[in-house]
Length: 316
Image (cartoon, rainbow, N blue to C red):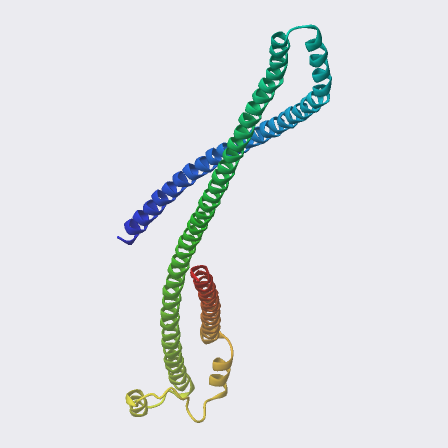
């Protein structure tokens, strides 16, 4: 059940990560499109500024031409007046008046036309300036929107990374806890086995002691039989007497030699010593394995504590 729940959680996390990645790609595309539009608007604004500079230069040139034309007309006015007066002396007054009116109408029409062009140029320049202001406002608005979307995208990416790190740390923490539980179970098993082996060793030592007492009693009886064939009453009393595992008070030299030396009793003592050494080796090996398991459990607990600290830091 827990494994299926973990798998479902992992699938849910993978699905959320895919959704976050798709949203991230969409936001990146929108940012690129907005950036390209912003660059296009900036290029158009630069073109408008260049056109405005050109129109201003043309307007300045037209104003200069108009000023020059006005100056020329002002200098030519007295000359035309003297010419008209001289011609009026030789011809009738009607013809001279008509020529003077025509000469006066031509410069005034040119001035009116230039003033109209000047007004049109000024209006166009004002319109271009208004467009440029609107374009700058639109560019600033687009830039603010782009910065806001970028900050939102960075925040979401940061949240996604934090969620993935948190899920990874949680998974690692669960694994370490499972390992710690397994280690604790293994340590408990080893402790139980060690207790059983200690009990078995104690039982073996008790059995060996009882066997040793029995052998000593049999050897003493055999020695009594060899020495003098004691009467049946003493033998029966000794046979029915409870044995305490203690040798007689005055054993013979042969008994002492048989107990200290060779024969079957020496072989039995050697086997007992060998069995004791083997049991001690097994006990030491089990103790060493138990110490190793305890050390591994302590390391696993330390690792779990470190992961919990990292998990708390990631949450904060």
